[in-house]
Image (cartoon, rainbow, N blue to C red; front, side, top):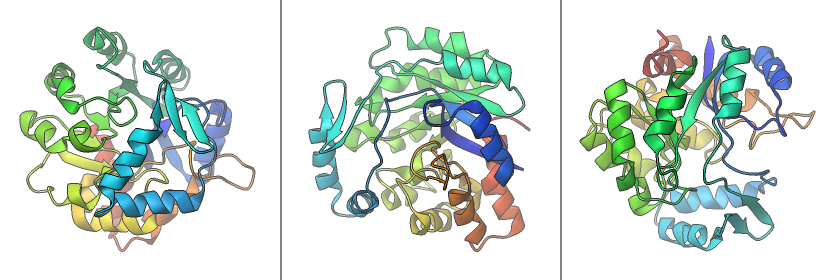
Length: 288
């Protein structure tokens, strides 16, 4: 059994019938969908992704942050030919409709942006009762807010027992230590192996026992995925894809086998591999 904890619903790139076929081809039983955050993203050159991973995994992070700040323009992101709009208030309804239509195959994250939504708790209450909604998605990186504004949302998620999947930003837009300290009963899943901190997040594993990471996206590669599991432990890592972005099959649709291959090649026991691919997500998303 395989559960993809981190995918995006973007039917322009991967519609539901194609997603189901791709899932069946590689044995992915369920996928947790995130409402659309952005418009179509052009293919990002692999060398650019490699450079950004290198910068963010070391002393070059301040430079990576300056590049990011420069690229954040009104209404979106623009770095040379790489440009796309960012939606300030992602629409949760399309994912809710998918969950209603395919309750055994898809789960959903309620996407909130408390920096813009004047009533984020009302939005949470409206969608958390939709069968299949398993937690809250937050994106201080592209929605560009300090994590300190998340207090009411995080407190409510802790009270409800809902995990949060958070794409951390630079500096005060990614203060995972404060989140884990102030909300010790809140399960926090840092997207993309702890982007943009990576090893500088992993070293706080013991200080933050409620902190987990997913292994999704071309924000990481196989080497970083292995290093993440070695540092965090298999019990704190969750399989994810970031579909439909980043990895393309021969038919130009999404390649669901890429990151599964990373996990298959890791030096893990069967119990550890099962934990990464399914059991950790089942526990945190309360599917057991």
